[in-house]
Image (cartoon, rainbow, N blue to C red):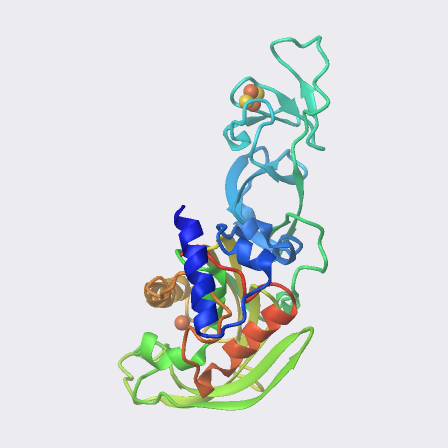
Length: 365
Ligand code: FES
Ligand code: FE
């Protein structure tokens, strides 16, 4: 009843204000809860689900991706990613264990082979398993020390991290950081240099020097690239508030809806690159993974680097989780847009053009 009244009110308002109504189908779906797992473009892409060190041989892990519970398991030689759902009575398979190379459900012990097919009914072992005894399986692979899953049909490879092959650069994995916010908002924060001097004042930037110098933005169907400079405060130097600031040349490259490549110190030997990937757990829940390629600071231990990065991520999380509305919208009327938002606007346009987000879809509020 409430929805019908809301629909009538919306139609009347549209007539009064001469607003074009959306296509009836879209109008109808506006009353549905948007489920991220129905986003076909995201389903057909690769997303990080775990640090490879978490999934030891003969272990089982519960994970969540695109509004779906998944189970990761390792039979000793191969890793698998399946829907975390037993077709018998719906128990979570991630509660189970590995038996003779099969995954056994914790409830009645049904065993599933590496293809997801039920091969044993322990209570009646002489009986053949039912034909419908199959688990939904997903594509899975390990790359850059992390485990990636594609729940649909992969349309492209896992995005490339050039520094991974560079033996001279130190690799440090930071995260994952759990953030109660839309994955698109988390990515948008990462590609927004205008927040450095304020959200990260005193760490690697300072609000006394908030100016950003932008180069020309390059966008194509394969992605977006932007070079810029910001006033960098050297975080390796103690007590240097406003003393050591230098204009640092940087570059962002976006080539996947939720993966960004960032590099600072462009043109120098002392660069730092960040491969930033966001796991879309749900429409308002994300995990941030940062893979660093570092060419400086040999005297800085990995532990102190990670501690510093955790503090920066905390500064970001506090603000991202405060953003309202919580969902990410392409509706340009909902916010104001500034010249310094050029990369986020290009990113939103690219998401729309790639069919990843539709400006007409109503999200859960
Ligand atoms: Fe899995 Fe019964 S629910 S075996
Ligand atoms: Fe930040």
